[in-house]
Length: 388
Image (spheres, rainbow, N blue to C red):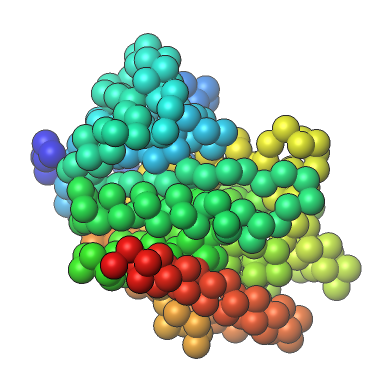
């Protein structure tokens, strides 16, 4: 990787604000241009990072910091699919990405050829099944949207039989060819595929819990959107922590912790909670059998990927809610707000104070999560035993 040191003026949110907002540190205009998707790169009128910023009320007088600006190698595994293609487009537009590797069982050379015509700096190459070593070697970040999508009437758990094996095989390759990379898993059911990945990495002697993350970012994106729409707020100022997991009742938006402080009626809380939990099904049904939430998921994954790359470069104050190895509850995996750093997840934040209504949902979420986690671990252990 090419590396340089850039000194930028930055302001840091107070500790209390950093613990309560999935937000990046505000930076100078020059730094924004260097780190984010600018309007010249295709997001018309958008010059800020995909990652949410802290509201102005949460930003304090600044200090100098040194940020290491690097050129990153990123692999997308499942790049020819419904999520993989728009995700690859967004990554090609990100100036932090200089080497973009697209892998799938077929069609990635065509996707790469298409994206290579974009006048952005990232080099993009497509790889197929026999070339996975080339796709992964030296990567800093691996994003995995591979697998089959949901169809009407299917739950994320219905995907387990197919996607579990896909994730197992891909993570085996990651462990072999780029064991130090950050890993972002999108493939559903995330509640089970992340535990599968952990078991594979352990079996290969390269498990680093700080670098394994299930992308539950879409739940936060949706929650922020739905609350902003209901209350007439500016989208960029809204932050709704979402904890638990990434499927149905395991998705728990903590509406009592919304930033900025907002009051809800009991009816609004119920409606928002259920809608956020079932938002994926809302899209599946609206597409009437033609697909699932591919575009919004690609956006959320690109936001998460950018957060990881900015944190790798040493930028402080990067927070995202994600499904990770955790001790926040008695479960070994749980989604909650995390502070990212050069080594991956530097800190997993506690759930904080919640209402009786949220506490009730939390117990339901944990009960459902427990079964999904155990299912993933059992699958990985059985596959490993069968291979001996």
